[in-house]
Amino acid sequence: MTIQRKTRISRKRAKPRAYKTPRCDFATPTGRHLCRKPQKVTWSEALPKPGEIRFLTGPLAGQVGTVVSEVRGMCASHAKAESARLWSLLVRTGRCDLADWHRSLGVKCGGPICGCHGFGKGAYPSVRYELWNGFSGCSGINAWTEDHTLEWDDYLRATWGPLYEERRQLALAVRKYDLGEVIATLSTQLSDVKQKEAA
Image 1 (cartoon, rainbow, N blue to C red):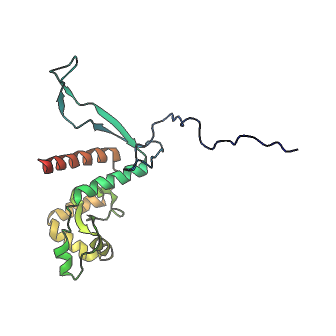
Image 2 (cartoon, rainbow, N blue to C red):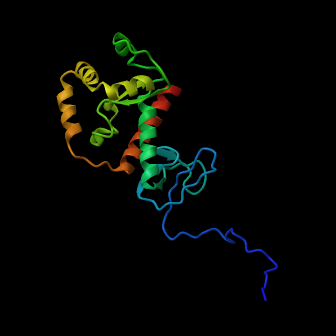
Image 3 (cartoon, rainbow, N blue to C red):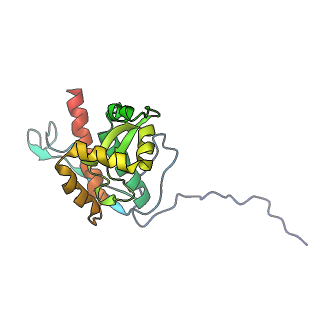
């Protein structure tokens, strides 16, 4: 004899999962995807911006206080993606700054504007998030330089001049970034740039 259940068992949880440890803050702009991996990278983010504010109402009216900071966190993969996104926003100028150089070599511009690394981010991760190691270029020249390393190295030597050797040593050094510090620093720099553009 087979007993059949009259009501189907719901596949969804009756209540949202209760996490005991902080979860990743990452969310897509549409909010459709929310990451729920454990936080591996944390940083403090001032609200609404670093500095001092004057209280207008309440018991502290007329007094000056410090803006309260919020602790944010992401999983390792999304922290790397956020660091790369902020770095690219600061490096890109909206046009290919390498156009004159690569046109002299017979290479045409092609593709969207992206952030190009002077010293490759994969081979030299110790300078991956340094702004001086970034150039605003088209995706075509970005791919071309990966296959023509000698020409690209000649361009870096000519552009950086006496700073080339110093930066080369920094690229060869072993260094591990604190992604929380990277995100906080780049976020502040990007906020300053936007304020200057709006002024």
